[in-house]
Length: 143
Image 1: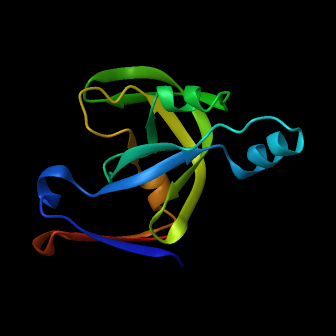
Image 2: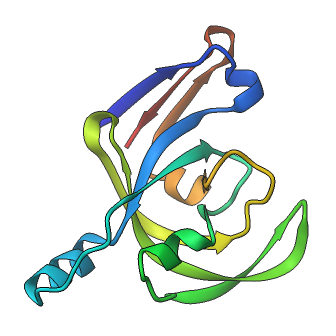
């Protein structure tokens, strides 16, 4: 089980942040390579582990940059949007520390006025162990 631990001086203010990369799902990447087509480069992002988010959310322009087609639609409610219709995308998220890779469905939504590009929600956390040690300014994620 891949595992990573991060210490942060300002964990309480910023929250548990991760450097991640978004890319095409492995199956689609292999298909494009086999067809001799160009594969979009992975996109570096900041992700916040958010136990208050029921689903993983990605900044809406990330799937567009990867030339992905939506897998569906969903309706979400956030502090800034009620019953907001959004597209969903199947994507690969890589946490370079210990090469943790998660492929799941992400809801593309505007994450306005924030320093993050992704919310790592409970749907992905349901397959993980997440430990938050506030007094030590440290968190651990095991997948």
